[in-house]
Length: 278
Image (cartoon, rainbow, N blue to C red; front, top):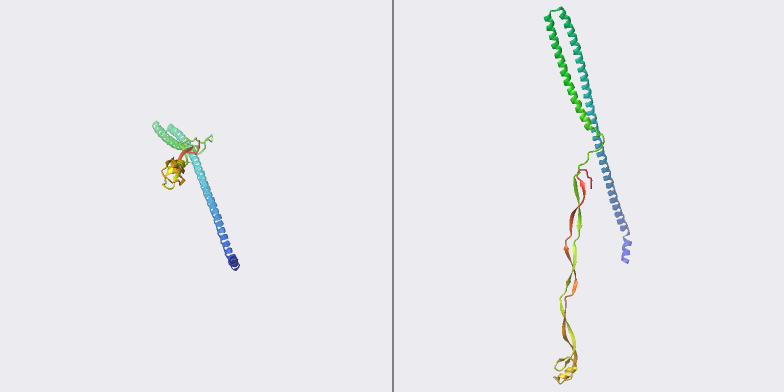
C-alpha cells in the first residue's frame, strides 16, 4: 500500500493529464456521432421535400395538358360550327342567285324565240342543279364531319366524367392464403441407465479349531466331533449363502423421441388485388 501511495503521489500530474485526454476524446466522438445523425435526418428531409415537389410539378403539368387539350377541342367545335353557318349562308346565296337567273331567262324568253328560251332554261336549270348538288354535297360532308367529331368529343367527355353515383366498380376478389411459421419443440423422455448385477455373501457365526483349522457350527459340535484332541478354538464367520441383486439405477439419460421442426400453416386469407382480408 505504501508503494501504491508513493506511485500516486509521484505521478498525479500524469494521471490527471491522461484522464483529461480520455475525456476530450470521448466528447469529440460523441459530438461527431450527434452531428452525423442530425446530418442524415436533414438529408432525408430534403430528399422527401424534393420528391414531393417533383410529384406536385408533374401533377400540375398533367392538369395543364388536360386543360389545353380541352381548350383545343372547344376551339375545334367552334370552328366547325362557324363552317356550318358559312355553308348555310353560301347555299342561301346560291339559291337567291339561281332565282334571279331564272327571272332574267324568263324575261329574255318573251322577246326571243322559243328555241332560245328552252336552251337558256335548260342551261340555267342544269347550272342551278349542279350548284345545289355541290352545295348539298359540301354541306353534307361538313355536317357528317361535324357530327362524327361531336360524337367523339361526347365519348371523350363521358369517359373523363365520373359515374353519376360516384361508386367504384366492385373488386372480383382473388383470395390467397397467408401462411405463418409454427415452431414445434423436440419430444424427449428420460430413460434410466443401470449398473451391474451382483451376488451378496451372507455370513454366519462358526467355531474354528486352532490346531487343525476345522470349522464347526458351534463349540458343542466341535466337542462332539472329537476329531482333534485340542480344545483351543476361536469364533469366526463363514459364508452361509449368497443373495442375488439386480443392477441398480445409476442415473437417467435424456432420449429424443421426435426432433424439433418448423411447420408452415395457413393464417388468414387476403385478396391479391385489393388487399381485403377475411
